[in-house]
Image (cartoon, rainbow, N blue to C red):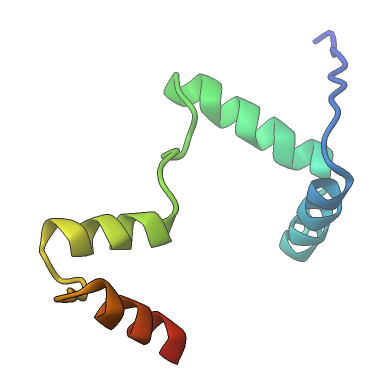
Length: 84
């Protein structure tokens, strides 16, 4: 099988963090990328859900279920903010 070459540019910190993660898993960056590409082709899609950060999902849940704090005045809100 002929082998192709893939070159990409990524942020140095992302590269360092990813290398550290993959080393802990016992694989190198090249193997991790091959795994991602292989699984993407098998599934015919990106093999994970791309969505909102968990913090945003929790905030949305609080809003929709009216679980967040409410205030009767701007002063009460500001007093609460300044307590933190």
